[in-house]
Length: 145
Image 1 (cartoon, one colour):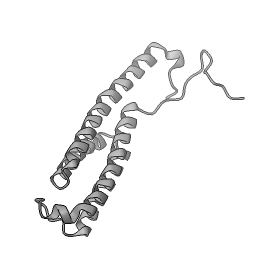
Image 2: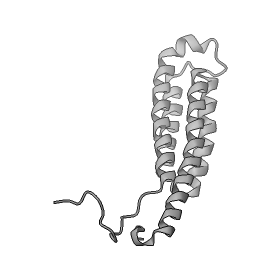
Image 3: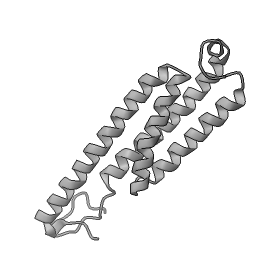
């Protein structure tokens, strides 16, 4: 029979950082949106080629750029526990905004993800801080470190 609730005095297992969870999920969702944008761009390449500032005549270029950005976002999502991952995620937001030069709808999608990124950074840090404060006030139930 498993325990549903911890008993008084039981120590709780440490939780993964909310900052890491939120930022990682945001980058993963963004990676899949970039992949779907590459599919849309591939389908629209003939109609956008004549209007756009960038040569879209090569399907290989669409898939290479979309694939590289997809992989970069996924790799960064695994590095969010380190400062380099958070800095890289912030830089990646600029790259996703830049995709709007080729596919204008990406400006709107990028704006949504930038808002999610900022919210992930702020709310995740606040949740982690509040967890630390609670644990310091209640050492009897603080997670095992």
